[in-house]
Length: 130
Ligand SMILES: O=C(C1CCC1)N1C[C@@H]2C[C@H]3C[C@@H](O)[C@@H](O)[C@]2(C1)O3
Image 1 (cartoon, rainbow, N blue to C red):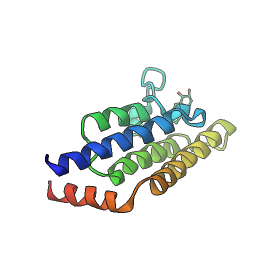
Image 2: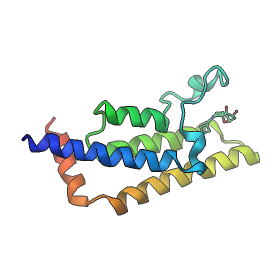
Image 3: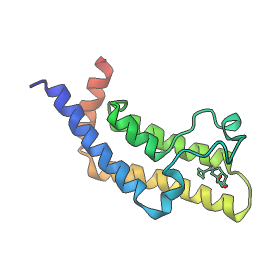
């Protein structure tokens, strides 16, 4: 009956839906899998905390997110990593940076518009107590 577990279960269902919507958007395909460190050997020397949407889906299932803010922090990490590793004024890097900003803005807007703010407050209260 534990209502806290019911709340966190509802959060996981919501966050899986968010992850799916982001990962299924063709604009964001480059963020769906970890950067291949075989293909990009210097990546982990520059980017200390890699993140991607597949990893975030696994984190949902491993109960790593206690509120939507924690989820958005990882979206922010995906975005910042892309901006840091792809700073050049080439069209390829510019497109990656544009897509990274689009991912961040789309994720924030999706969550702000589809999530009840009282529900998020409840999740953050639970997170504080743990
Ligand atoms: O930063 C990224 C991803 C894009 C957002 C995350 N990468 C680093 C490499 C630089 C650029 C060239 C591609 O060959 C590919 O290896 C990567 C993947 O894109």
